[in-house]
Image (cartoon, rainbow, N blue to C red; front, side, top):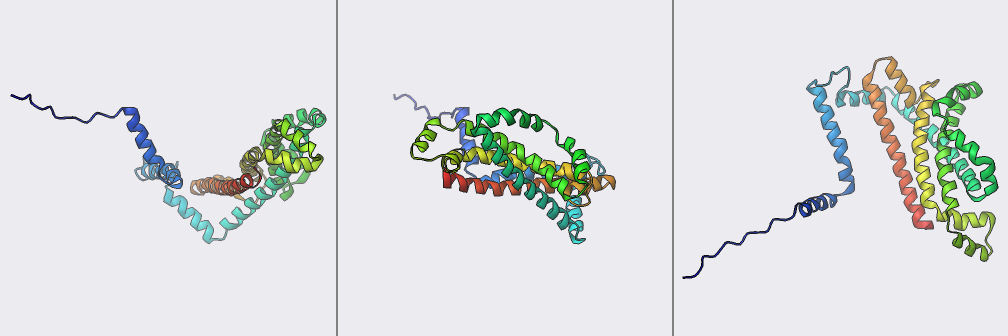
Length: 275
């Protein structure tokens, strides 16, 4: 009499392998779709806690009321000028601050003499909080555009200066010597060898500078401005318009991300072009 057959059972997969399989499946989804998960969940939770009044409406308005505030300002013709003037201040301050940061960073990074003279002073100025510059700039330049753009320039300068100076100090010495053996020196050496070698570091500094530019912009517009997103924050607070205040914060996040994404496109192009 033959022995009874035992049904074969499928071996259980290790927990670690199952988890990695799930993670791999999730990661196969488009990156933009994964990036939307957290904002959508945040929006859903926000809607739930406000509609069910878990959070009092005078503490946190609904997403719909925030959107309605944006539509109201847009239809009144006020939102566009606020966004336009703030964007203009950021772009001007970011451009000139980054340019100065690149110039001084290259000088300090390549010259030990310049580092000895300028390094300590610039590092000390970098530690000054953004709001500490506001009263001084107001006294020097009053409440006009010059003081606001200058504050943004200060904010954009230091990240670029720091990253460029540090990166240039660590450029491969053999690469530089090889370039010099071909007759390259001075600005031509900097432009053709040293700067291309630190392109990723430069763009890291530029992206930090852009974030700082938006931060310093709000500091500039919180005091003595009659237009701009920073002014809209103060005005909304003074008038008790929490919906407009949150709308302004959301707009700052959106436009900050848009400008960072544009800079990221330029970074990919520059890395492909020079590295």
